[in-house]
Image 1 (cartoon, rainbow, N blue to C red):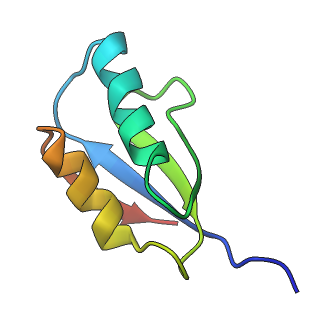
Image 2 (cartoon, helix red, strand yellow; image 1 turned 45 degrees about the vertical axis):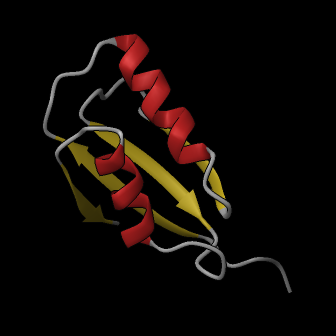
Length: 76
């Protein structure tokens, strides 16, 4: 049986520059268990696919906040 995959959308309150957004997405991707993260041309929304056996949505949100952003989770 394959790995479990969960999805969450993180809403970023601030308007980030492209470089800031790329840095933030890279920080999220650096978490163990994150499969993918990206904005798909929606700069306030970051979609994250992750393995819940390795990381949870709270840890993802905390990583975003540790990068200096105000944010909240939107489940999908």
